[in-house]
Length: 80
Image 1 (cartoon, rainbow, N blue to C red):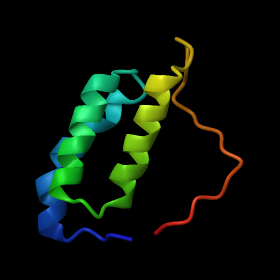
Image 2 (image 1 turned 135 degrees about the horizontal axis):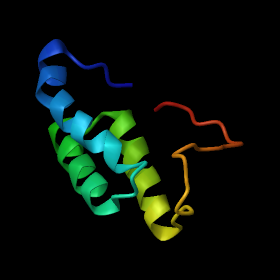
Image 3 (image 1 turned 180 degrees about the vertical axis):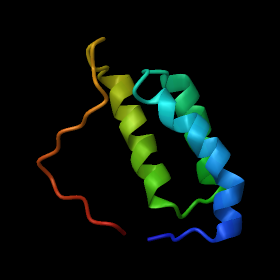
Image 4 (image 1 turned 135 degrees about the vertical axis):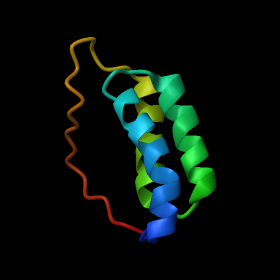
């Protein structure tokens, strides 16, 4: 699992802060582009891969309009 250095986090934190609100507001295009850019900056970050997969799944099967951004899972996800 990737651990950020202080320099890496300072480079990506503002991009992450812009990306995060895109998911609950269902702005899939913005979220996807932002996550792709974040993955380019830090390709080994599991969190970015996880969110990119989540955005792709939500794009294929959109949640209802009143979705509260919660996620239910019955599967265990092991970190790489």
